[in-house]
Structure formats: structure tokens, C-alpha cells
Length: 165
Image (cartoon, rainbow, N blue to C red; front, side, top):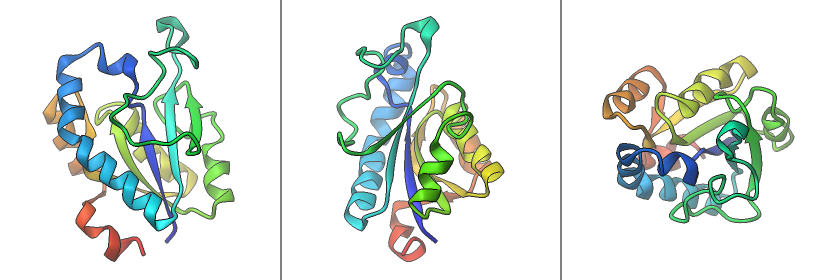
């Protein structure tokens, strides 16, 4: 197994619209950053995925498009811009992952009832094994987090060394 971490849509635009979503992200930020740190130390790919929305002026170069500063991504992390909930849909994500030899994706970010969930389910259409990082996917509604973690395969940070090496 060669995993990649997908860090999905933790952008200023989405956090500013919902106090509940912002609180959910803050509650899970340590898990998200620990996953990023583990992938970085292990030499596995990290892909930062951003949602562009022209109607809402969420476009590259705007503050709305940027990730919140609390997320420990780096300038040299691979970047993908998407226009649909599933990060694989009409992007170069599949090619990037194949080029890096990846066959598995782990997902942190937003949201448990939106793009993170769509990406987790959609990855299988491209023959990737997919998992949500337990406690690493946020939503404006905690019931959505529980639902996503029930229907998708999950992996806890404590399992990374055993299951991903």
C-alpha cells in the first residue's frame, strides 16, 4: 500500500460562513495537523485540494480561496483546484496519484457531508482505496461526521504506523 493524504477545502470562504463549521474544524485541527505531520515525516504525498467557486468569488489569489493558517500545509505541497465535490472529477488528481505510485487515499478536511465524503466515495471509481482519518473530517452538523465515519472506512492516527507502512 502507498497512501497519499488529501487535505480538502479547509478554506477561509467556508469557515467564515458557519460558526458551527468553524468550531468543528477547530475541534479537529490537531488530528488534521498530526496526519499532515505523519505523512510529511514518512515521505508520503500530501495533496492540498481547494474548491474554486466563481459565483461566490472563491478564486485563486483571494483570501477566501486560501486555507486557514491553522492548517500546517506548505508551499511545496501538491495543489489541486476543483469545481465539483468529488476531488477526482475533472481534475488531475488521479494522474498525480498514479505518477507517485499511490493506491490509497486518506482524507481530512471539509466536509463530512460534502466534498470530503464525495471524494472518499468517488475515489473507488478510480480504483483507489479510500479512508477518512477518524476525527479529521469536520461538518456544520456533528451528526454528519458520525454518519460519514460510519459509512466510510476510517483509520485512526494510532493505526497509521501499523496499517500504512
